[in-house]
Length: 205
Image (tube, rainbow, N blue to C red):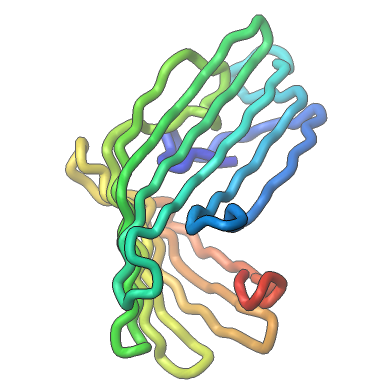
């Protein structure tokens, strides 16, 4: 598993014993321009470095508020929060804030940039909960090759460490309500393959 928005370590093995969770994709707060996505988990978990299962309740929420909605290039205020409670009432929290830009050019090219600044407090037992609190610039760029095929590059630039990480190169092909993603993860030197079901929420993934 690798649950960090901005990961702290490489992917680690996690045993859920058991864990229940719920996840909400991007949704609009009624009567506002503010969108949110959230997820929460509760149960018992163990990683390789922990000698026994540990009780854990963990939640994440991401907020986006567009400053100029409907424009070809949209700027948004961003906020992200994480909060975990563990055995013995140990707590871990992360708050992130920043700004994003999303633009579409000539109806074929798209660029998304997000800058986030993080603050953290407390401690966690699990590497998979840790967030790298360096300032980060996240980028996604895509370009249509044909009506159904697009090429993309996405990744992160660690501003404090002056290096690019988590880079993926990929191709996407859409068939009616199915989108297939094939790509290469540069850092992990591995192939990726995803099957996405689209059109379930007003045309969104």
